[in-house]
Length: 313
Image (cartoon, rainbow, N blue to C red):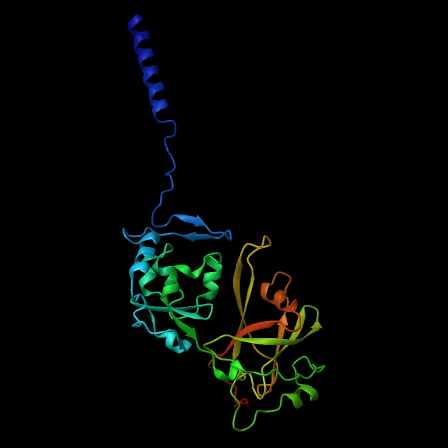
């Protein structure tokens, strides 16, 4: 009996020690600073950080910029102007340009130093990264890449000095085809005025008038400029973008884009009409409906390869 009791006590002690040593048989792995560790941004969104190679930290980058004589590889040339077409030619990891707030940067040297990784920066390679920059970290200054600035994004001279003529009132025709609109939107001269919109660049158009057509439907008229048309033909459309608050708490902004087909006559000179359906939970429609006269909205286009030439044959 004594031996049996001793064996029982020994077994009990062994079980107790085993439970103490392993209180959680399936522990969850602790998060570590690896290739996909997440960090909360100031706007409340999650942005992924990557594990940088040794010697590629932000401190290493600042040291490099203090010692580099020509980090852009432009031979010490002063700021230049570039078209968007020229920027698009530099869209690879070995040759990467981007536009931020109207300035052109050669960010090739910075790619492997970026805490968010190369792929994050490549999202804006050869394009405009302003909206992406504002969405991910609008609080960050561009001081980290200021020495990589190589120039400015060129605007067409015709847009720099564009006058905004008086715009006629809306007609009662919701499609903009009434007598008044047809007279104002007469066909362009045979020489063909330069279109106000560009498929490669954003153009800020001035809102001249908003009219409620029906329940949840508004018409917006934008000024184009003297002797200018939208350039959008039947079968084509344009893109509208706005920077809207990310949430009700006011934490940053997010870029919202939508496609619309103008309802004004294709040859209308000096103005462009958009018919917008406003849904209760629609971000763009509600934002456009709340705009006041004088607000500017960025548009780009035309898009779409299908062009209607008339007839049904």
